[in-house]
Image 1 (cartoon, rainbow, N blue to C red):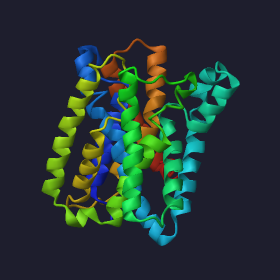
Image 2: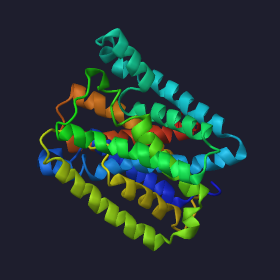
Image 3: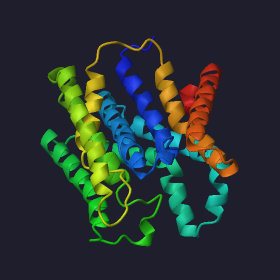
Length: 314
């Protein structure tokens, strides 16, 4: 039995992992631009901030128990392991880059693995700043969120130009400082102030629904501006993601095993291998690629659980 695990949290993580697969292989892409704005550039963008809020929330227990730097080292270890495992997938890409871009890719992460390095940096900063007040922590979250949310609008309005160096994986706003740090800081603040004990599940659910509606609306509005930009750091995510995480944290029910959590982690780590290879070597449609990526990730995750490797890789 996984004592202390909330079943709703694990279920929400699994749902968010499915959305991440949708970002990389949107099953609704063939329905047109509006469908993409509602899904891949809209609703699906909840996934990463929600994960980050949970990361920050559970980091608090590690800080209190004195295990915080161990958490940072664990995330960095996962980063190194998965970068090594994905090397056959991105090897040709790596060899085609200039040396300095090769360094950026290796240092910041291939495709979805940027998240691990971003989380490690954000967590390290929060651990180093663990003595700051709640007010200062909230100000830090607000400032970094505001910068991350403003950059796409400034670019979309053609008010700023971004140097070529700020191409993937060194995104100007989807990075450790302007995406990972603010949402992880909000999660940490939620734990420090024990929001789950102060906010009802109903109130959190209503706030989450309002936030989700705001996210898809903002996605449609942002797309109407002159320049096309990524929707990774939509401003309304600051309401939707913490509210959705809080809704799960206040829901009753304990998880009896780690199965759901492992499936969520497995989907996140494994799906890109399937997506990359299927898009590279087949002409399958997006819905089929999404389905195969999900099914393949689930099968491999179950194998990892059976062999005992899941505890080291997931």
